[in-house]
Image (cartoon, rainbow, N blue to C red; front, side, top):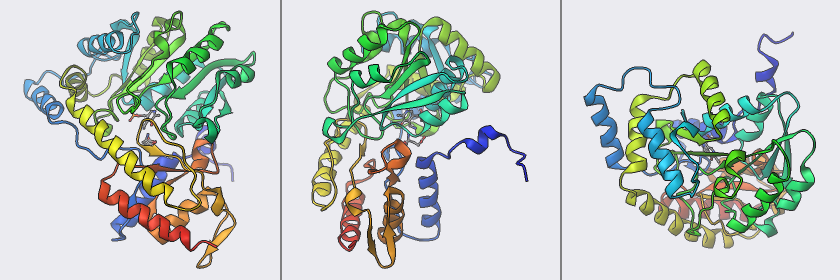
Length: 400
Ligand code: PMP
Ligand code: GLU
């Protein structure tokens, strides 16, 4: 029977991160003691002063109507100021900013506005799950360039240059990276920028959503480099650095014609993002930054803890992540092994095995373009992390 649903949705993969989180939630609701390290979501509460700003905005009663499509003017100005002062993107003005319902929505707007059927987008791989599906939905073709474990999973500017064709329209990466936690240095980004600048009409989508969780202390924005403002769409948001995943606020800073296009797209799809959440975002970006700094410190402590625990599991190979809150170990050593009638053939099986036998949920690296790896999110308490790694170690030890 031919399906009633569109080819577009039939061809789309479900988000593996959200699917695993759903599975873990279902098992938990059946009373099974699952430790969920699958979802990239801070386990901290949104800081109090941000919560208070949202409450105040309700009491003020001014933010119940449709907000301007591209976001409230004062929020757009505050974002532009931050990008100028902190990221050194000196050309950033309020008119370049479009506020959306999360950075995922921002990325969808950008690809819907940039891509024609058959346009290619180079993705630095391993990559965040949603990039490829959004690109395909917009008619584009994802082209992966792969970073090796030896180079902390970072693909290089030379690889980018080799991947460019007449059809390449854009390049996308995240730094700090989901899923690897790797951070591009200023020099690495300069090399990427010089490749991009050699071509006309080639754009960089720089996903900087983990900017505030960067243990190197040096965040570089490619949009700040000479000649790059007109070539760069900087994507950021409030979900990670301010523990505001459920508030759904993200933004882009883009050349004016792209910002205007995204505003037009958003005006037909969703309208402006929730007013109350935008008031909370304004408090986040312009208020006390110390809660975010405390969270970053806590993630660093957990990174060091989990690093020791992972190094203690025979068969796991890992680099040392420099940001975000993920480990991305190589686990192909377990492929072909079995325990209690369960055979592990690939990373998907490995995750299912750990879910069933260790009651720990991780995400398969296959979803991020790296089928020999798994992603461990360490946005969890130290107690949970210690227990989870003990269970993983025990479950791995019986795989023969
Ligand atoms: N980019 C990356 C790399 C992410 O990990 C996420 C997390 N969901 C997003 C974008 C989207 O974030 P949000 O929609 O919550 O702002
Ligand atoms: N970005 C997070 C993750 O990778 C949240 C889930 C999602 O939106 O995919 O797990």
